[in-house]
Figure 1 (cartoon, one colour):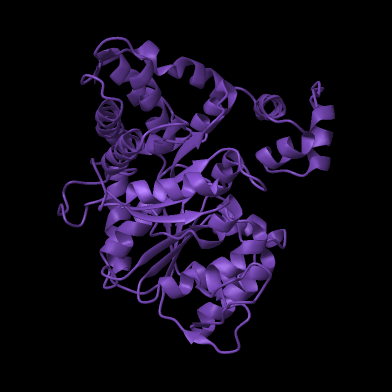
Figure 2: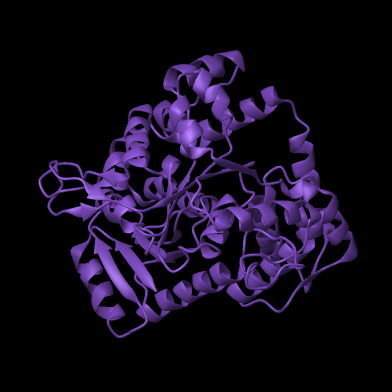
Length: 435
């Protein structure tokens, strides 16, 4: 298991490196701060262990920037309840208070590994072979058709555009296509455009030579080179900066890349799969996405149905997630009562499988006894929320962002809008600003 340690305290960092030396199953890389880590993290990393209090970019901001791409354990010497809660909301798997012994950390790593291995994000038909459906847990008529299409396209090198709402498991489908393709024994590299700062995307994709910029102390291969012979999955492709889109188009046309600061080109053989939940036609009309790149990437569009159209899958996924969380937290085995099962099956799941996983994990933690009740799921409050108008939802989101940050700038960044737009919306909704 390859683990990245991000810790500015050199004594702590070196101590962890030495302590992990006694555990042969862990391959450790370490970074002195979050910014260094962001430049060098790749898809070989399975877990990140990071401090909260670091100069430049703290652990919470670091986790936000990672945007769910990696499993994360946070460690800190001066924890506060609010920071612990914030880290949990961001999906952090564990929160350790310094000082701790190495066995405590190893236990946290193994808990994270257990749930990662057990929880799979998507589910289609069992009518096809188990080998072909290795990524999936259940059966669904809605997915039968899309899965058959993935098997057809997997045999080719055609570019694929995976479309669908947030949380439907587009990356799982991308891996499924790769694993059923002639490239299956070569690398599968996933990169989330929304998780990488704009000024780092080009170097992340194409790599750089030593001295190409101030912090380039050594040469680094980009994701295209790392994926040579295999598949490169570009998630949230709509978030790619416009100026980088032109360079991506050139790479797709010429089948070669050039690292930043380099003079020679490098030939690459990579299959591209993209994903987005955005309307790219709107982006094109707004001059935010290149039309020529769209047609190059959209050779085979595959729409992944939302969970509300795949209700046969809800309970198999829910049971697998429940089992994984009982194991993770060392609970006695739990099960859903009939009312809870009915509630799960009839809820609309606007957040799709990601929301289902979150709901079940919370119920596993908060429920009393060995049975999950309908009340433990809190779906009635979620249903009420989903019926509010967009105006109300926007106002609530802004209010929550203002309350959980220290400045208007931070709130705007958290929501994903400019400060000017946020100020206008605060006035529009008559929200009392507390910054």
